[in-house]
Structures are given as C-alpha cells and as structure tokens.
Length: 455
Ligand code: PMP
Image (cartoon, rainbow, N blue to C red; front, side):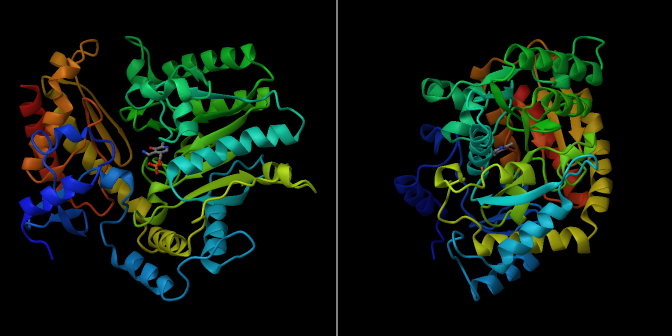
C-alpha cells in the first residue's frame, strides 16, 4: 500500500494522462489529490483529508460514495455472472432494468410509449447510438436525404466525434472541427441570454421561433433534433424555461423530425423531477441516459426508443438492422447497480427528500447573489449555479487569462470542498445524501472561494 502522498503523485504523473486536463498544469497550478475511499458525500484522501464532493464526481453519484446497497448488489452479481455478450444472449439484470426504465420513462398519453432499450457503456456512446439510430431509421424508410442533425448552441453531448459534432462548447470542439460532420445549430433558449426585461419564457418562445425557421429552411433534410432538456450542463449550467421543450416537441412533429432528449446529466432526479422532460410533459422519440443510471458506480448508458423506431429496423436484410455494438453492452454488473439505484429511489422516497434539500440549497444560495462579482444565481432542483463576471455585470466577463474558475477551484479545495467550475461558473450538484450541515459549509466555502478568486 502506498502511503506517501508525494511519492504517489510522482508515480501517477509518470504514467497517467488525466482526462479534461492540461497536464502541464500539474503539479504546480493543479494539486493532484489521491483519493483512498469515499463515504457518503465525502471523498477521503490518502492523507486522511476529507473533501465534500459538491459536483458528485462529474454528476454521476446520486446517493453517496460506496453506497452499501449498490455495492452489495454489484458484489452479488459479480459472484453470479460478470459479463456475457448481449448478442444472442440475455440475462436477468439487462431485462429487469429495461422493463423498469421503460416503466418510469417520460410519457405523453397521446403518444405510444418508449418501448425498447438499447444499452451502451458511457454517455457519449449512448449519444452515438441515438444519432445513428435516427439517421438509419430514415434511411430504412427510403429517406436517406434526412441526414442533418439540429442541435442547440452551447449544447454538449460528449467527446466522441459524433457527439462532438452536435456539441457547441468551443473548448472541446474547436480543434476537432475539421473532422466533424456538419450539424445545424439553433439558438439556445438559455434564460441567461434573455434581453433586458425579457422573461425566461419569452426568451424560450423566441428561441423556438428561430428553431421553427431553421426547420422550415431545411425541410425534409433533418433527421433529428438533439437537446439537453432544462439545463445545458457542460455549457455552464445554463437553464431554460420548459415551454421551449413543448415548442420543440411540436415543431419536431410538424416537420417529421425525431426528438432526442439527452438526459445523461439531467436524468434521475437532478432537476427536481425524475426526468427533466416531465417538466414540459413531453416524451422524446429517443432518450439517452447514463451517469446517474448506476447511482454513479459503473459506466452504463441506455437509449430508449419507440416501437415505431424499433420496427423500422426489422427486415430480412442485415444491413437494415442496427448493428452497432460495444463489447460491454448491457454489462450485468452495471445493470445490477442500476437496479439497486432504482430500488433506492423507491425505498428512500428520494424525490420528496430532494425537494427539501433543493429548498435548502435555494435559501443558502440566495445571499450569494449579493457578492460583487456574481451576475446570476440560478437553480433547477439539485443544481445551483453562480455566474461570475466582472462587477456582476452580465456583459463584462472576466478575462479568461485570469482563470477565475481555476482559482475558485483551488480555493475551495484548500477548504475541503470539491467545486469544479465550468469556466467562470461555479456550481453545486451534490449527491442527494448531502446533509444540511454539509450544505451550510458548502455555502460558506463557496462564498470564500468566489471572494478569493475574484478579488
Ligand atoms: N451528454 C451530456 C448532457 C453530458 O453532460 C455528458 C457528460 N458530461 C455526456 C453526454 C457524455 O457522457 P460521458 O462523459 O459518459 O461520455
């Protein structure tokens, strides 16, 4: 066992290439924190220091680290069946999970329900599945000219080339742009971009008009619209009025376009309802789930599709089948974790508890609006975001060279809290087990970190 943290760090940096990291910033600008174990909302370092995981380890964790019931379910499954290919074979966790996901998926009574589940093994892979399915479905129907995807400005759907092509966060996309399939981008309904005096709903309506115009100018060429319902997470926790989703659903129907809801980050209670689509009472044609799907224990994605989409692939020809495959599709351990996580939603009345927690978060966040360099504080359920700008003026962002977000990260880490700002946007997205005391200390630390980073 390695006990000396410095020795451990040098071993790490000698061999590991970390994700989403400019490695040159290690170790001087960015401390590397060796974590030995997790417990509830805490990450516990090798030197015994405790860090409150206020971002749920990239938004995956739901009920706390090492949640015993999920851990036990994985252990039991591992002793039974760890993996089998899902082509030609089946197993209980995959079927049980599919049944349960379909039973809780967003539902519009006037529409046939989501009826089939296709598994993949991470969020980006799930997005690839949905994009390919949408295109291939139209292809099979004799409409191969429907090959354009519409996505929203400032949206994010993952890092693989297909997912990046429908993403619009320049930091991740720009360098790979020459490799990416062309997508059409519609204005984001983002309420932060509302004109002075314009309500969030009016902003959403205005963005929907622009979406309608885009659809009309490419009629018959578009196969799908992909969006993150309610919150553009990686784009800076930018939130929109649910009315946009309703309008987008109607426009998709009017133009024969499939609607892909990417609930990889917003799903499983993050925005206050089990799925964000529920807030607009809409049902997508394809629903992408991952991250919290397994309670944050194991990588797994699920793409839920309508019967109509599924039927479009049934044919004597193999080429008309959806041949997409990943080795670990529907991994039994990951499915067992997901089933245990769904059990916890039921046994612990999680959504009701989250409503109280979210109200508490709102109360603690409100006073931070008064900080000099905070332009906006916004919330959707278990997500709260603080937009930092110069003097709190929406039109005067900080010079990116100041690295305000990085400074806030370091300041919070030094105080035992993991905040990982998106640019200059600091946010809370804690595990649902977070306690009032932990939230109070999170609010104190956030205040100090913002003050220190923006001073
Ligand atoms: N879609 C959304 C909305 C996401 O937030 C993310 C991850 N941040 C992804 C897709 C990609 O998921 P993964 O990181 O598992 O590939």
